[in-house]
Amino acid sequence: MNAIAPTSIYPGPRAACHILLVDDDLAVLTTVGGLLEQEGYDVATAINGSEALELLLGHRPQLVILDMRMPIMNGWDFARALKARGIEVPTLVMSANGNAARWSAEIGAGGALAKPFEADELIRQTERLCLPA
Image 1 (cartoon, helix red, strand yellow):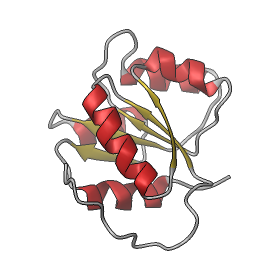
Image 2 (cartoon, helix red, strand yellow):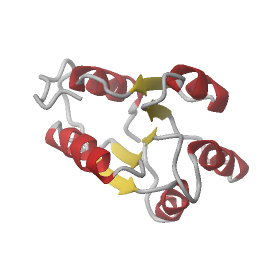
Image 3 (tube, one colour):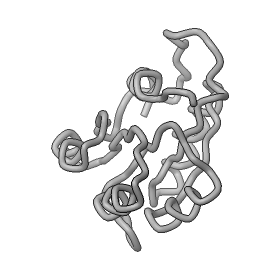
Image 4 (tube, one colour):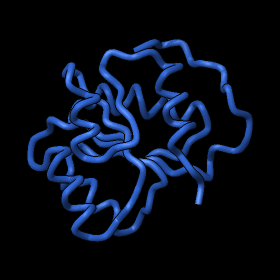
């Protein structure tokens, strides 16, 4: 991931766009979450799908950025749980595995980022998918 913060390509308030970032790697949560917050987004984090589901009880995001391979509840199980609860939210799959795009399609996500990725690409995908309520 690029440590240099990109310049926004779409001006406007981002604080209205609430993002749920789900990844079991604390360094990723810190780096990606910090970058998104620096860009003006409101970010909540969870270390697995189970914790993310608990957060959804009181926090309804406009975008979920989701790792697929996590302990306790992986990205596939999280996506199934959302569907079972009737929760529809744009999702961006973020994975170190080369199969990020395929996995994104498997769960019906709106996009994929293969780690490592450039910060500009993260922001472009986020801006495209994050639709404020």
